[in-house]
Image: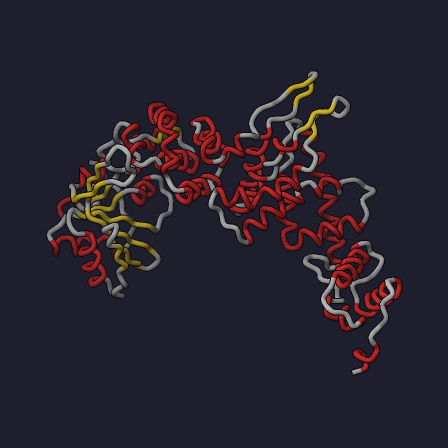
Length: 476
């Protein structure tokens, strides 16, 4: 058996002592061992013992100097404690059997061998002994280390059994391939294709959790291409699949918006780890299939796809069980505005157009510009270079206007309350109209966002609308 050097941390010796005191065998298992072999940092340790995992956790906690609290999850037969900044989970070795139409296994106590057999992939079916007789010895029954060297994702058992037992493993196979830049073994990938429909019995929350990990992987397009090729994407995110394909009429073709979207996603991934900016890349052209039109005069158009896409966002997020909070609003805003900076590359663009973009984008202007830069995916390098230089000019003007006018998240100095007090009005449409007129005047540069100038403008506009200043209120 191979030797693997465990990190220098007292937790491993403490677990070894506690297991010996209880007369059970204990092993570090799964992802921690995989990451140790791959030299990836990991602070999540899974301990399997051939016996009572909860009793082992309690004994370990007693032996650790700070006597950490043990969290027990009786439904799962697991216990967890923290040792420094490490999270250590304990479970008894188990074997599982599935009935044909259930995704919930019947679980019973088992041996280490049983436990390794129920693992999803060979690279996760690894253990390191914490027992006195062979402390630190690597247990690798399914050649997981060899598969890591070959950079292969493979199931320890016949893949059809593995995926039928827990269909989420199909998503996990693609997620690990995407995170690690590994290939999926051909037999394993064929089994994903054969069993793809079974993903429908898995909760959307679990599917989206894996999908987010694919989105956050170093080159996320790789994971999405595997999802597409396997047919899983057609089931879990059909709206994205609609982007795929090229239509030609009278010799005119549009680009394949699926592969364009993946390129934009990869471009964003090179400059940002922000999950929601990456989702904005995925969603930015999502309405193109719905807005696609052909005209003999101008060719293919997708007019209004940015507005339509922004309106589609809440339902798409709801269907995917993504949060309907400020993250959704951020993605929605970027989808709605993603064409606006492109229109600002002309030399004739006015300061008011720049002000409007700053006003509407607010603090998300930097994220928007990252998305816009990522959206340039032409195969013509000179064209890309020219567009990026234009964006440099736009960003320079954005900075200049922002410095002079402070328009990020700006609010007019004249509030709705001031308008009501000035003219003795109650909340009404006319108050909103006056506020809108004032905001437009500031954005157009006709009025400075300073109290005296803005108030004089308000009085003049109010007078034109037949309103009189409420002097008695102002004199109090």
